[in-house]
Image: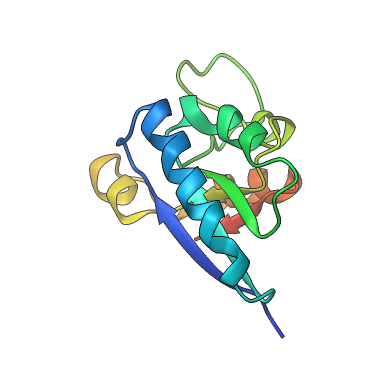
Length: 127
């Protein structure tokens, strides 16, 4: 049976203390979660590594990046490469969110490049 994903995108909300508290509340309820379901949280980038560490040893709950670059590396100020995300212990990435398509005019070609970068880095893509 395929695993079902319950995902929450925090967008640009919650500071690290609030996010950590929310993760504690989520993990406290996970014992009731069937094994065929996974919880994925997508905090702001700055909180990802802290929450990855907080979740070490926990089953069925993972951190997602809210975006990744279409470039593998280089002089792209503000971008985060998929390999950097993967190396930080993050397992998922959201690509193609409607807000990014609308506000940042992300095209299908750009999104395809991002997906390719993410898959090459071993990330699981939420599209």
